Image 1: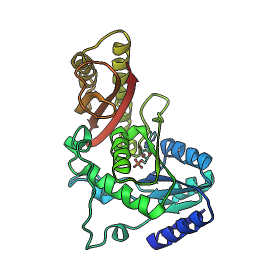
Image 2: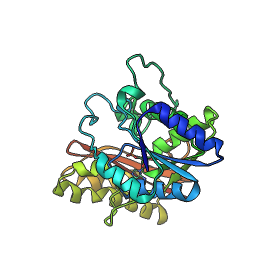
Image 3: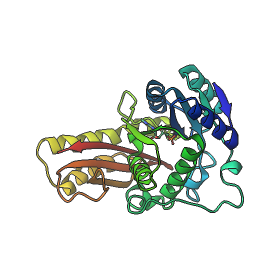
Length: 281
Ligand code: AMP
């Protein structure tokens, strides 16, 4: 495995791979890799001749007062994991290289960016779409892999790729969970033992919602109220949002029908966790 930190070097490597007729799969991450990331990496290895993983904690997607500075970073462990799993290139650009002083261009996917997580994290998806577009321009992959864990992010990127006619196929893979149901996340490392136990409530609440839908409940408000009640009973949890939306438009569902995304964001102390389930009714 080769580690590349220069943008120009990454681009010329990709050019060479294209000239040789080799397909490139790309997995963008912010590092602190876990099984969720590895599921994307393994899929890319299966479907492409070459796999590039990027590790870049993107300042543009963190708001003021968010956890950019303390976001967990462990490059040694990450590079070891990538090498062990057969990754070809680990792309690790610096912040100054990606956003030099004179940096001025941002991409915004309208409509999908200002709901759900976009409400409490204004500017977050603008930062995400901008960095993903930059990375796609640098790595030039045929396929790029994202997790359903960040369902809204996946939709924003799909829309950007469609709107800007980018020649890359976006693949969205299922959420990988801990044994007890907690969705894997680099941010889980912020949780203390008590919070870690309490955080199981997120998946339980999502499953309760699915159970209610399966047993015939059709009023989103009732289902959300039940979820809210469950999570509110957990002493350390503070709800940011719980929503049931159309899974393609992210518009709030007025009735339980069609393809739906049940999504939530909940704080445990200062740690904000997100999770979701999709269901077709
Ligand atoms: P991050 O490093 O958190 O920016 O995540 C990088 C990619 O991994 C994103 O596409 C995430 O959606 C995906 N990802 C993160 N956690 C999980 C998970 N538990 N299961 C599947 N994919 C995940």
